[in-house]
Length: 301
Image 1 (tube, rainbow, N blue to C red):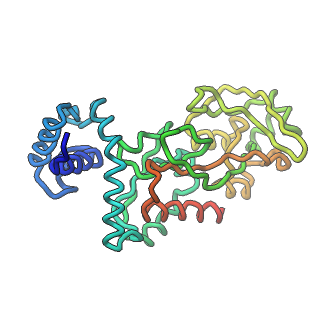
Image 2 (cartoon, rainbow, N blue to C red):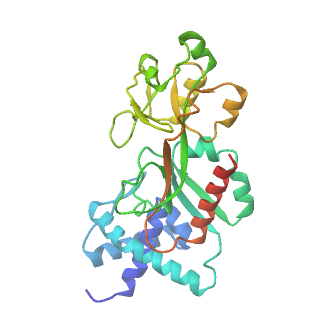
Image 3 (cartoon, rainbow, N blue to C red):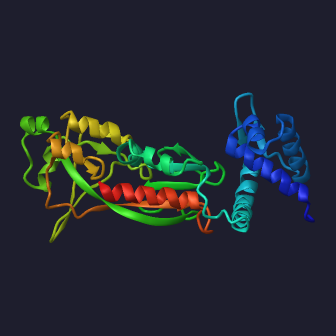
């Protein structure tokens, strides 16, 4: 198929539809009418000979063929955008919209309450957070960046380790008063332990303890299993059971005595925090600015 400039124009309209989630929002993003968006998509579908979008009164979704096509062309659109930014001297400008697929622990327990300073620093940037159990399809959903705990499992994405978090084993004084305080990690098998589900395996995470001279895996059990870390933390504070948590954003609970660090000599386990990018190109300035902000927040905890 020879190059047709109308295809590139249609692809830019398709990208606006995917980013905005509807024809109406796409029209606002690129400055044309709703009917103009519809005609452009129709022309692109006719030129390619495939249906790109399934349309209902409430939503617009990519078809399987549309998803494959968009995943192929999106990196090229990003490259054009980056080239235009460099050519205009705006490659270092932090502005526009940033969509972040963010870890469900990291956002409420680490970043919440601290984002105002980021907004003040970059008034021309708006940030939209998406928090799910699994990393979303960054390309098809128009997401610029994912920030997630755990080892990389997404071969199609570019990953970069930002920092490692300590893992603490904690309990509330109320729980310890009722059930006694374990003196060694091996004793946890006789305690009520709050479980957290690994979304990839579908099984609770193993409880690992790394000391100076040895590493232990302890079989634990309990009546409650969570996928929401904030709820698990609240149940731990309430005295429901013993929990293993990431040691960021909980210093105030430890300092106040609401939670007790049970095994301070077994803090060797680390849980990595990764950034994921949909492209191997250098990330835009807005992405790097947000990552720098995340690391700075962690380093002050």
